[in-house]
Image (tube, one colour):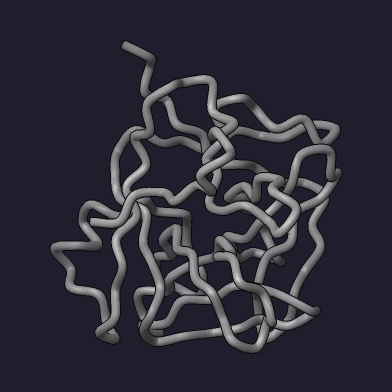
Length: 173
């Protein structure tokens, strides 16, 4: 198990003081169906299910993890950076759990309970976002105040203005 990692001097943006997001590292190609049964689904792409994933990719030049998608048919994880869709067969993480749902974002206002997948070099949160590219679902990223999200699809990074963010619906205890 790998939980969301936060820099020591920064608290999560979530309104809840406990973290319920659980990210698991996967290093072995196709993800076993038992694990996919607990992974967070993000929609459909070319007939296959996509799941919420995150990873670092050497071609991005970034040291932090970017949210993206794992495609069950292609057995690869995808993120976008520098105008391109980046892919990996190993070395990515999947988000597990049933306490999530998608919330529409308007005017760049991210809900307080949005899932933070990572933090940028400046410490600002990077959120898990979902949007349509044509008739296909894709999962990518957004940040507070942006009126768009960035998602990978078809080898490219797409800027999409109508999008959702993943939110944690577990109520504080």
